[in-house]
Image 1 (cartoon, one colour):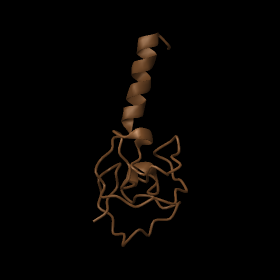
Image 2 (cartoon, rainbow, N blue to C red; image 1 turned 180 degrees about the horizontal axis):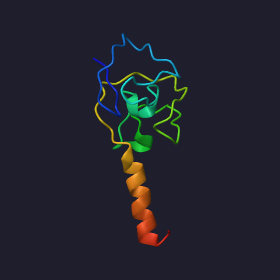
Image 3 (spheres, rainbow, N blue to C red; image 1 turned 135 degrees about the horizontal axis):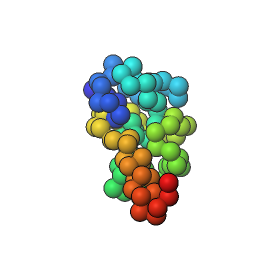
Amino acid sequence: MPGCAHCGRKLDIIANQVGRRDTCPGCEEDLRSCRNCRHFDESVAKACKEPFAEVPRDKDEANFCELFQLGEGGLHPKDSRDAMLSAAEALFGRK
């Protein structure tokens, strides 16, 4: 059963019927985003297992990727970007 990658909530969606403006009923995050795609994998180049995908820079926002397939909802923490920015600012002394 598909699920939200942001909050882990299971979704009652059949096949891949996800529109660009659809959001998770649990956390209101965009469903048609890289983090919710079954091809999303932070350990590969561009964080996408599809070699021909035009990967957007923001993995949390809705996009028009034609290769999108709703994933199983394994949690992909969103705050990692914020944590990295905070760490970089602390390292370089930016306030």
